[in-house]
Amino acid sequence: MTVLLDKPRTLTTTLPRRPGGGQDVPERRRALGGIGRGEVLNLAGAAATGLCTAVLLFGRLAPLSGALGFAVVTYLVFLVAYALLAWLEDDGPAVRDRLMTVVLWSAALLLFTGLVMVVTFTLWRGKDALPHGNFFTQDMTQAGPLDPITVGGIAHAVLGSLIMIAISLAITIPLGVACAVYLNQMSGRFVRFVRTVVEAMTALPSIVAGLFVYATWILILHFPKSGLAAGLAISVMMLPIIIRASDVVLRLVPGNLTEAAEALGAPRWRTVWHVILPTARSGLATAVILGTARGIGETSPVLLTAGYTAGLNADPANGPMISLPLAVFTFVKSPEPAMIARGFGAAAVLMALVLVLFTIARVIGGRGPGQLNKRQARRAARASREDLARFEATRSPVTPPSVPDATPLPGENS
Image (cartoon, rainbow, N blue to C red; front, top):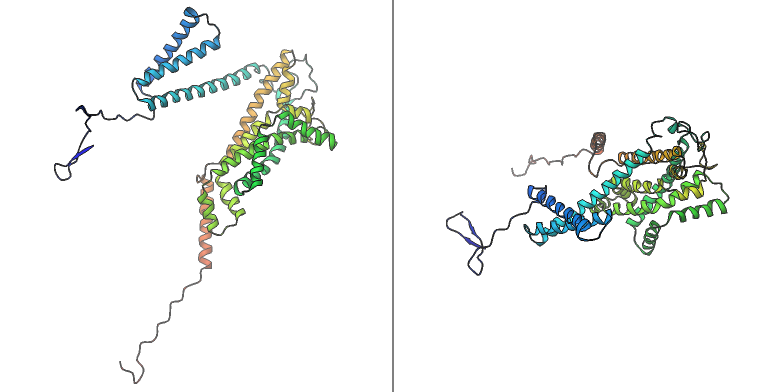
């Protein structure tokens, strides 16, 4: 690039010349946000190309059939056509970037569509049971397979799920966070061994966890089937999830915060309790949510350790207890339409319960690091004023140094 200085403070830039004598075309910056009109037209044209090509292949040119194959061919042709259209406007890296953006948006749309379909189908199949109040306040002791939906409910299953998940959270939250802090703050061979065991337990089948608790708690220790045993089995499933997620979150805490706390003389435990854990509180809440979502939907450990009951049992230490997933599994096996409606209604209540627990965890988790609400800001300001007042009270007054008398003594020269 050649720079010509004609006058003082005058800068003229010319483009470099090609060997043939021409000038390079200035590079045009690509917009990184938003969708322009040309992008919309490219997407629409590529979609029309994919659809028309699939119609020709499945209806005219090739003996192809099947809705799944039609959708796959349409999507693949759409990607190829979009890549060609993007290549006419941009270079290689930009084309790859736009193509991967379309693939990721397509995957997100597919997952969101699947989620909406699952929720809608569950609510639609359970619409016969959800409007009835007895469905939420009664158990199944007075209801048989042939009774209408106006008799019986899932109160016993809701209470059982809440008790089991409360027992599991009471066990897994302190153990999981403590283990994650140990893995994050310590080093050595034993730490690597613990991390390997945690990662291996993440893929542990739920039936194995149920068999483990059934063999130890019920067969060896001779405790009865109960909600406590089911809570222990669910804890085995939740614990590695919470440990791994909490470990990842604690690794994201900036190291300069720990170094600053230790430089001020704080011991390691106080640094963890007052600096690391409050900073990662929102992420730790997410880790608890992941573990809760894994444990609240388990069926086989509950079936092996808690048994089955049609009545309401609020004592987790004695007697069988049922959870919502197990109630759904039992209801939908029946050929009666009323029982199937109860099963889908119980599934809808389970989804609502997970949403409520998620909201509670978000509220407890609070905002991100450094983001204080009004109450926390007032409390921090009050603590700062109290500290300032204490410092002012303990600070001793400074006595000015004494100045010697400058008056000359008798007989001295002035």
